[in-house]
Image (cartoon, rainbow over all chains, first blue to last red; front, side, top):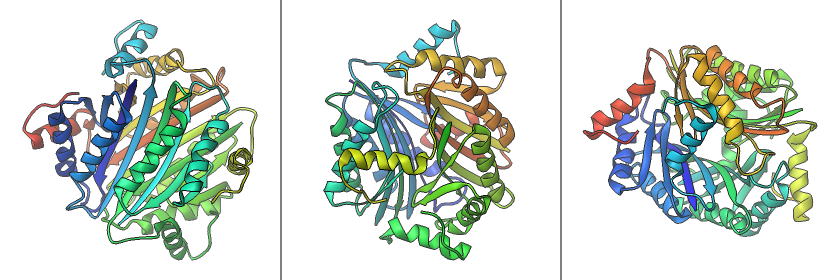
Length: 104
Length: 104
Length: 104
Length: 104
């Protein structure tokens, strides 16, 4: 089983710049040992179970809840049986079909 | 605390029509007793804690996991302290500002 | 052709409450004559072409761009050939499968 | 002005594997000359105007419309005045705050 998750989470009561808050979440993910990739619009990570994926989302929320009055978050799940290592595999599959390397 | 969640979840290995699968999730939500609204693009529900919200999402996934090989889901959270009943309140607030009833 | 769009758009540089800004967008949509539904997490509307759908999104952006320094938006499209009136039809299809009316 | 867009677009009437269809969109983006990054869950690109961003989304749709009966798409916009090159800058800002390089 491969659970791919792309998510963004940030406070909306702190004005225009929120990287101070978002960096807490990225630090937690980086230290968690999970397989992830930071993108300019969120974080993509992969787990083997739904419980693990949800645990990361809960921990992300815990980084903000004590000092943020309003939090917005978007999450996308792509869940596929009998697969693994899709964090790299999905992009490779696209590159094979196009016949060249893409920007990543 | 008010956790507003909008989410959609559906299999992508079952062809063009997926209402048979989606209706399992809506049935579960309807029977759960939670405050919710079905929209043409997903379901909006409100809980008082993040744990309750996540419990609903896990149960939604359980409706599909046994017979779907690939599942896609999008989730949006709007979390706000010191608020409640925003499932109706947010729309009322917009209507007050516009000065007329909107379609809902 | 039926283009169903669910979207939310709001400034993130204006603090916790943004209904003053969001209501401009809802007012524009309400006056446009388009078929729509306001939900607690966004607006769902239906058009017959992609061009019409995109025109609405551009006009939404125009309501905010002059006095907002940072704007966040999420959009979901569900595009289906040989269909129409899905703003009501999708929910009816779910209700038929469950065998009862749902909250909407 | 910096318009950052993260989007995914795929047919839902073609069964479990859709990389054949998605690769058409990535090929178009790669050949367009636009600044982009492919992620395992979508594509992130940056433009200077909303019109350019929307043009890319329309062209993505054109890659699928002729032979797909149902298409699903999610799009996120992060629009910020007086900024540029955020495709790399946002991640750098997070790394500075954490004090180390992250996976990207």
